[in-house]
Structures are given as structure tokens and as C-alpha cells.
Length: 557
Image (cartoon, rainbow, N blue to C red; front, side, top):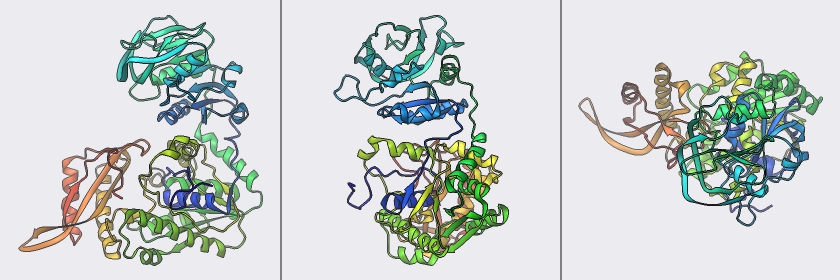
């Protein structure tokens, strides 16, 4: 296998779950040695589904999410996928995604032949429209003007199924440089914009194309368009919900595991928590959860996790206090990348030792989510530059011959939360803000020491307490404190101080791929600042981070 300079396999997926310290470490170990995947092809209880053909669009996952929000199961597959790869979901229709290519370029991706041979309803979006036109005998060419951002769509047809019940004109979101010049035989124009004479097409046989993006929030009536396609064109019933996923998952886990024993790495985040509870309900005493305290958790978190899962939920939990091991390994380490690698390697070593003490084990469970699977399938990700290593290291020494159990493999984050509620998990676990895998180590800028961790824990506890007090916790993707390596002069009473600068970070996001800083009320920021400088000795200045992602990242390291 081709590898990068630091021995990580090219194309290895980077987990996007909350439990990054668990799922990513173990995913790396699986890819390197000793862990095999026996993932089944999608949920087996699906009686109808929509196939999303991915042409490399940044919005492909949004299409799948919007379809599932309408209670219809969907899966994203590459444009090379065969009919055999999708038939298990009993497709009722196909959506062709957008993409960065031009259909007239050599080697441009196109829809597989079965899309048309199966005579299923088809909806092409942006590049998907252009691929549809090109493959059906029409012409696509560079537009005289690019069209990015808001536009107004004008219908010029009557009783178009995908536009049923919509007004004659409405706002849409455009993002394209090419446009349709000539329609294929049998197709007609259904709508236009000021810049695109052909902005929507159809052939009277449930094949449609849209030059705009109905899946994004910037197209206010986009959900209604997708709903029309699903229920008027594809005749879907809308019976799929995360709730009925629970019983199906329990049955599948029992089939897969039989009498085998399984270990589950548990962090306390929603993904590993839901995974653990699903397994517990399926196989009970065959499950052992392992919780590793790396000494980089927030104040009171080790105790809270143990109380919740061992006493509250009755899970068989093995607790490992490895805090001193991690601190010893991090001594003198200041480079952010090296921090992540050191922490990832040590986690796997500790986990491996704990698992070996349990005796014979057959399975390893982790909270892999569908975005992780999507990213692992996307060729474009292999060519992307690495911004930061996600809490891992190459060559991780997991020498266990285990089979992988991933019950959440086909769920998005919001669906996982619904499943968690259906399982009876506490809301504080289900709606917990994401916490980075390296924990507080990447929120302590510079060397990680016990003293600096204690300072940060004090600051962070105040931030979260005041955010909760203002009833803002559930509205924010992440909110936390960062202990910088800068020190400033201050005055407290009649004395000069020379203390650390604490930075406050609060961001809003849907999926962590992009984020915007939250406009916290001044009074909330004021209370946070006042409490930190008065209650945390060693910190004498508080600043607020107003950087979006991009150009910044959510975490500082």
C-alpha cells in the first residue's frame, strides 16, 4: 500500500464523529493490521431507498441528509458503482450530484449505464443535470457568465411534478460555470433564470435536471422540490426513521456476533455511547467497554463517564487511569502534530494492554458514522493537503485479530442523536458538544504540563457553566477555553501580575467542515472574563476568538 512520509495509508479516512479519540485511533489500527471489517451493505430493513451518485460535490452529503429528513433512506455511491452495489436498498430513484468537473473534458465522470437502463426516476443537480444532458445527446458548453450565489428561478411550464405547489418564481442557489446549450431529444425546458435560459429540464418520463442546488439552505423551497421528487415521481412512502433502526441493528449485531465477545472503546461522547448501548441491548454480558483516562479530559469527566455508563446504564466498564503515562510521553513536546501522534500511539498501546488482559476477544466495536464512510470513498480526498493529523500516528501497534462491528456506519450525526434518545441515553450525553480526540492537549498551546492543564480546566469549567447558564449550550457547536503560551502584564490590587492569556472560542456549524464564530452576548463574555481572572490564579487576561473556519480551524492546534 502506498503511504505518506509518516507511514499513514493514503486515503485513510479521517473520522468526523464526536469520539475522535476512539474512532480515529482504532480506524488507523484497523487499516494497518489485525482488524478486519465485516460491514454489511447498508441496513437490511430498508424497503425503499434513493441512490445518490457522487460526482465529487461538496454538497453530496447534504443531498443524502435532506432525503433522510423526509424519512426516505439514501446512500451515496461513487459514479463507478454497479447496480449490484446498490440493489440491496431497493432503489426507487436516483439523484445525480453536482461536481467540479466539466462534462466535455476527457475522462469526466458520468452516470453509470444502469441509471437509465433501470428506468428509475432521475433527478440531476448542477453537474448532474449537465451529465444527464451530455449522456442523453444534448450539448453542454462554458457559460458566457458564471453564476454563483442567489438567483431567481422562473417557471415556464405547467404542472411540472418537481415544482408542484410552488410559485411561478422563487429564489434558488446557483454554483456553475458551464450551462446547457442544446437539449437532448425528448426533453423540454421547465424553468430559467436571468443568466441560464435552461435552468430546469424534464422529459415527461420522470427524468429531471436542475441547474441550481435544492439541497442547500439558500434555496428556501428546495426541500419541497426534493419532497415532490421523492413522493410524486419516485412514489416513496417515507417509512424510514432512526427509531426503527434500533431494532434492526440489534438483530444484525446478534447475527454478526453469535456467541463472540466484543470490546468497545468508550469516550463518553454520543457516538461511542450509542454504539455501546446498542451492543449492550443486543449481547449483554458479551460486551466489555474500555474507558481510557488520558489525563487530558475536562474537570470531573472521568467520574461522570463512569457514573453514567457503569451505574446509570449498567454497562460492563473497564476503567484505565493512564494519565501519568500520557503526561510523561508529552513532556517537552510542543509541536501540535507531534502531540497528536504521541497521544494516538499511547492510546492504542494502553487499549491493547487492557484488551489483552480480558482474554479471548472476537470483535472490536467503534462509532463510525456515515460521513466517515463517505470520506473514505471520495477519491478527491486522497489528493487533498493535510491540515492536521487527526489524533493519530502511523504504525500503531494493535496486534489483535478482531472483526469490526460498526452499527452506526450508515447514520449521520443528527440521526445518531435520535437513536440515542430512543435508547434512553441522558440528554447531556446525546447533545454533548464535540470534544477533540487529543483532549485538552491541543487547547494548551505549547508544552502540556499538569499545572497548565489545571489552569485550563478551571477556565474551561467557567466557560461551559456560563454558556449553560445563558441557555446557549445546545445552540452552539463547540464552546471552550484555550490556554495560550503568551503571558501579559496585569494589575490585581496593588500588585503587578504576569499571567497567561486565556482565549474563548465558540462556533456554530452543521458538520464541522465549516464554522462561524458565535456572536455571544457581551454580558456573557463579561461574566466569563470576570470569573476567569478572579477564580483562576495564573490567568490575568481573556480574549475572544472571532475567526471563522476557514481560514482558521475550530481548534487552535
